[in-house]
Length: 203
Length: 254
Image (cartoon, rainbow over all chains, first blue to last red):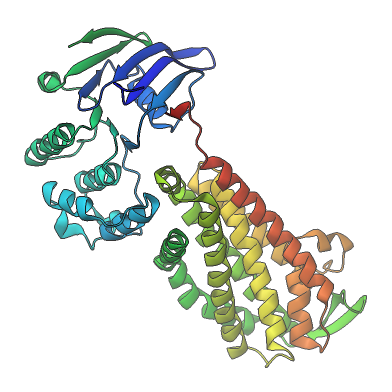
């Protein structure tokens, strides 16, 4: 694939007669930051789930060169495990040697003080930080983030973008679903999803 | 191996942090034995005993406490494993997507289930003895308790894979458990000698418990029957877990 870390070809998804995605094509190059925008119900989360391998497309292919990190919109954590135990469990799942980068994220996203706290006792924002950390900690080639900053305070929101910039600068591609008009200038590309297709690709 | 060790450690942790289930064990089990013991007389009752194909005259008080122990295990362990399976399915799927081997994961879950049920059933037998006569064969009584625990923990796990509504699972476990264990007890159900009862999940465990509590016999066939129930529920539950954690994707790595 060479120039692309992810390539989506003619992605379609239907739920009975409801055609959510009607043929989505795009590619993401390493070191780029791509925003996916569109109205509620336009299929943004469905598209990201298909790209992440969480959901099968009705038709079409996704080709990935490297590893994927996916941050779902709703935090997927285990309420009975502590933050530290989550890192340790995912370290084994990702077959990593250490949790050095995850530890860096604890500091960067300001939630180290909750390391020994069970996920069930965390606030919504801190749970979201953990959700994001689990997607980033193995430093994947491409990151797929579904509105990853829900519940973040302003300072953490800014720190999130610092982390994204750090990843982008190290050659990783990042795809973010966004609703916020003011942050659209941060993206290298914007994919506007409308009527099940990418209507517009602004660079 | 390291993945298996982590999966086993955290599968245990999930069960051991279920404070509500452990409170039920500590508080409810002795109260349940005490209440049932207090309201039941020592009158002998006829129990259809499969090992001799005849009727055994057993102490009614002790028989009720034995079935009460079995009943409490079916509900608490069914609830524990249903609760954890239902709650952690999305998280478990995330772990397998991250690279946690599904075979080792399943093995870890099965190992945790074997050990937790063994320990909880042993506790329930020891509590039973506090309110009972000392059984002829305590190992046999425990085996009956362990097997019924395995059956209902696996049923809980299976329901956790299938049901969307958390409440629905709890009700199914309670209803199945009540129907199953109540019907095995000749005091609660004078028709407990009916042949069709042998097709119920707790039948073999009740037979084993009675054999250990009141006789010197060991009905080995009943162990196989109970293991059959356990293996069927476990394989179904873990098979569905395996399917539900598979990659359903159109993603190809190049």
